[in-house]
Image (cartoon, rainbow, N blue to C red; front, side, top):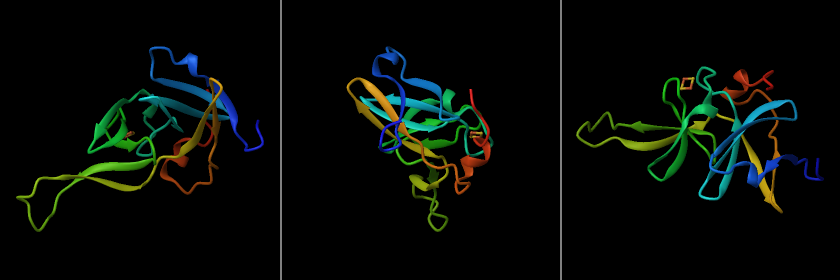
Length: 140
Ligand code: FES
């Protein structure tokens, strides 16, 4: 652990051709995603019903990079943990739906890359986010 409570997660070279890595870190089950040389870390299980978010596809919706949960296709912004959905204007149904960011639902963690190593500062599992319910005692 570093002074900033960062934990060593893995090496950059561990990613190779794959862009996701699920790890156990500090007693937590998290995954790290690499998109365009940026790394993101989130708790592994989906805020909606505990699905394996780490197994989802990475897709862009309206300029936001999201994980698409394989169970019910909910979209989670990699950067913020917000749910992302298409909203309609009930007063004008002729308008096309637009992508909208909802509340933060999935816990994310701060990632730092230094000298070819990836460090993660875990955010506290304090029960304030929906995903905390499904990520309490999980460890791989
Ligand atoms: S469990 Fe992930 S969308 Fe339902």
